[in-house]
Length: 179
Image 1 (tube, rainbow, N blue to C red):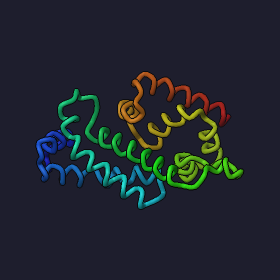
Image 2: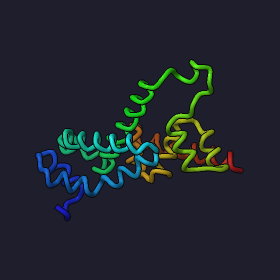
Image 3: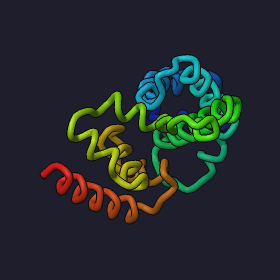
Image 4: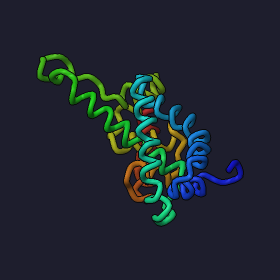
């Protein structure tokens, strides 16, 4: 199992191989948890999302194994984790009290904004926060998360060309904001 790549492990998981699942988990879980923590400071939510992610991997491995090779297994797992994290944020927001705007208070920043503020500060952070959300998402995926263009495209549900175009527009906007 240790010589098999992640894609092979997912194919074995699709056949119900628990040893392959354990090896896949051993290889990818620390990385997934680290990336989730970059986007969410709540350890309980991170743990729940990680658990939901690997449950989904176990259940949906056949979809990855049977589908066209559109990306890496690690990118596929991260896509699942990112969607689960968004779902967790939505659940938390749904179960929270009335929106801050309804209470007359200032609107609280989104979870991604909080994570971004904790990660990048100063002029760069200010310039990043002023970017349009779709440009900021692409830069965050490519630069802060270290994804390839293909992985970012899968994560964001965009064509690779769109990711490249938005990245270029974001870099130009950042350059102008910082000059």
